[in-house]
Image 1 (cartoon, helix red, strand yellow):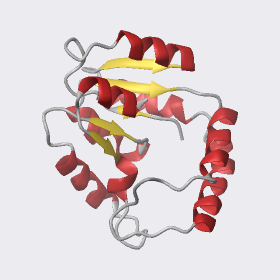
Image 2: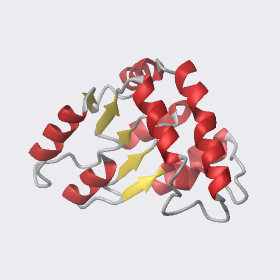
Image 3: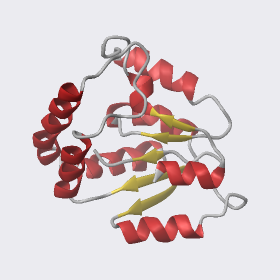
Image 4: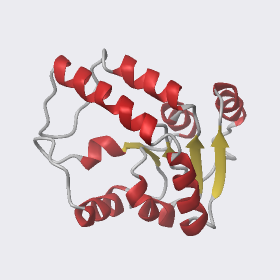
Length: 167
């Protein structure tokens, strides 16, 4: 969805996974990650694709629209399973990935997807607490997403829509 929205709006697409990791797949501290988000989201218009719920509040400070995809856990798990067979187009700077690592990492997500199957409730609570000023779009089906995108006009679209996606 984020790719389609970026194409229709002309806004830059920021993949949070590409920004999150330090070289060698090292996780930043929460303070480092919050600061980096402030830097990469400093522009006037952007679409942020990712779901780092623990640090959603800095994105909400700058956002005027949030898109949340609420999909069944089994669909998210199925996507992780299939992603395991595909290498990403880009990797974070200083990080490498073999096909085996990709498969292992994506497939390891499946149990956590089951455990966190109600994570959208937590995201929506954070949005309600810190994003009272944002327009919220919550989509539960591919059809709803398609209808939104079909009706999206860049001239009438939001100024800075981030996208919070499925795990």
